[in-house]
Each structure stands twice: as C-alpha cells, then as structure tokens.
Amino acid sequence: MQIELTDYNKYKVVQLVGEVDLHNSREVRAVLLDQINDSNHLLVDFSLLTYIDSSGVATLIEALNSAKTKDLLFHIVAANGAPLQVLQLTRLDSVFSMKDSFDVVDGE
Image (cartoon, rainbow, N blue to C red):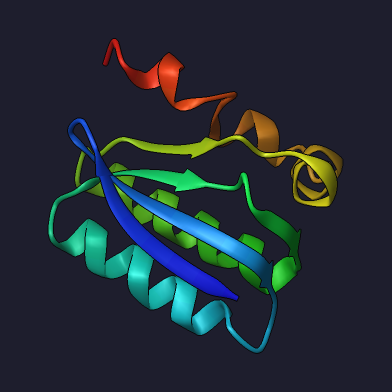
C-alpha cells in the first residue's frame, strides 16, 4: 500500500494505492488525522485502491467524524470495484460524500 499526498484546489488529496487492511490501516489513520488536524479539507482518492477491509473502513469513519467536528469537507473520490462494493454493502456510501471524479468538487 502507498499513500500519496497532493493538492487540488482547496483540498488535500490523499490517494490510497493498493490495499488497506489491518496491517496498514494505522498508517492511513495517521495520515488522514494529521491532515485534518492541520485543518485541511480532504479528498480521499480511491481510484487506485483495490481492497479495503473493516479496519480501513473504521479508519475512514473516524476521519470523517473528526473532519465534521472541525467543519472540514471530506469526500471519497473515484471509488470503484471491491472498495465501492464494501461501502455499498455496508450502506456507508450514503454516509460518506461520494464523488465520481475531481471535476464534481470544483464548484465547492
């Protein structure tokens, strides 16, 4: 798993590459919470994410809740394949702000 940080407009983009599971979800958690503690709006890019387990999903929920308490925007972008299915099966696709592409966040 790799985590890449870039900027897109007023957002910090956290791109997750590969698999997020019990072995690396703490690293994902640290990156997301660091960005939120720095008061960054977040786009979590799922375009290159191939797998996410329950520990990864729990990490995302924690980050979303932290972002909400700081009035920060938090979107998941380009979810597809197995990671999207996990969010749909758990009905978390209605909890998270899901965006198909970066273009749809341009107007915010």
